[in-house]
Image 1 (cartoon, one colour):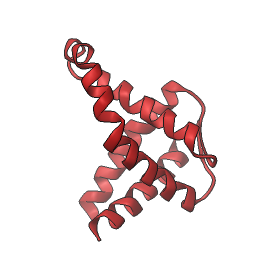
Image 2 (tube, one colour; image 1 turned 45 degrees about the horizontal axis):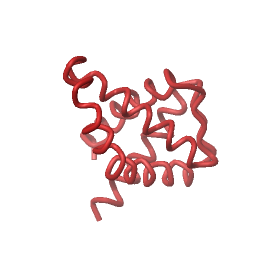
Image 3 (tube, rainbow, N blue to C red; image 1 turned 180 degrees about the vertical axis):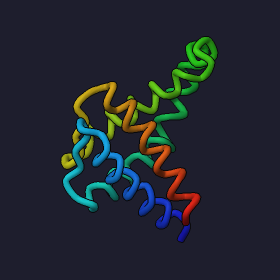
Image 4 (cartoon, helix red, strand yellow; image 1 turned 90 degrees about the horizontal axis):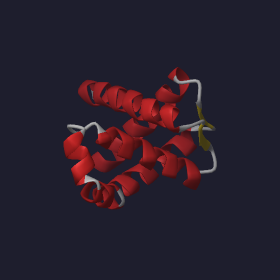
Length: 110
């Protein structure tokens, strides 16, 4: 049950972040739920591989390269989902940061 609530909160965070950022477009809340599921799967399977492959760069940048990896995951989700559009890399980077902040606030509230 906790996973479903987390998906709903992540979908809500994605919709709110798309309202805040002008370069992000989500067609509907169903698309946001699909986005939350795809991001969960990509973060489970693809992100650890990217983190392991980029350990030296992550160490040199004191962990800031993880934001780049997060933006790449969001751009990959943009490629996979039809109703989700991100205009570019910087927008994906900002979307990841804003979505993480909104998701943390929603987790704190609920």
